[in-house]
Length: 128
Image 1 (cartoon, helix red, strand yellow):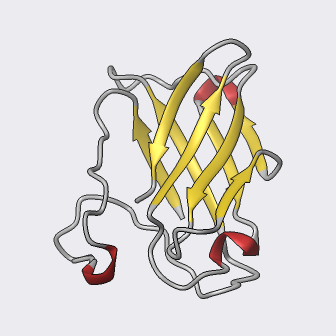
Image 2 (image 1 turned 45 degrees about the horizontal axis):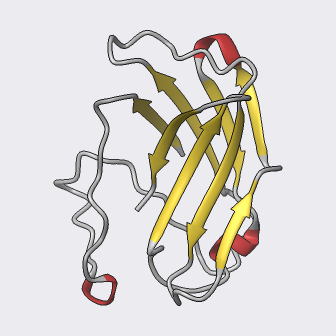
């Protein structure tokens, strides 16, 4: 899956009712990540991060973390080791979702890919 995130422009509301949450893929303007429970392959997310003016965001010195609250609202995931910065100057990274990210069936209550520089949080991609 490939995502393009534009800082300052891309915003998504949180899901209000996860029990009745339906995605209309045909009319959606967003990319949605889907997987089977305990999916063990084909779970990579490629991300291009851009500034408001559509120039690449420089990821030099950044770490990418995946954070999420699973559908049961009990289990959480915090993964700081499965991101690979592919081209920092052009704002490109890949995140290999661990199978634990899909341990509980349903839609995430909340999910983020977060890029952190040494001193500041640079961006937060909401995946819900």
